Length: 62
Ligand code: SF4
Image (tube, rainbow, N blue to C red; front, side, top):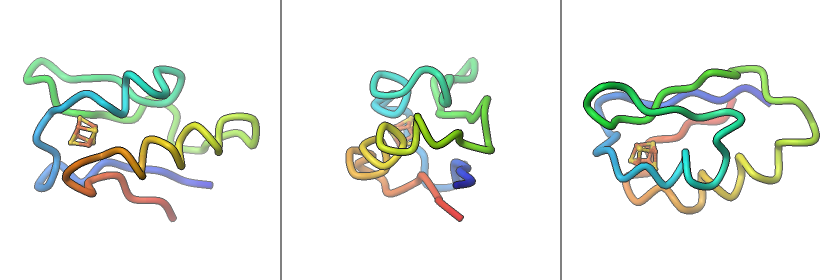
């Protein structure tokens, strides 16, 4: 699984980071960033949970 955050959609609610800090971080403006774009299998469920909980639908899985 690959993951990224669409910076045009992200509004900085930080839910991604709350749910999976192993993969997501926040930049200086509080917007979501990805520190581990190639998600290991053991973290896929948490990333899927983050996708479901992003209010802006800004997390892209590919
Ligand atoms: S949960 Fe969504 S809107 Fe909030 S910081 Fe993460 S990617 Fe951005």
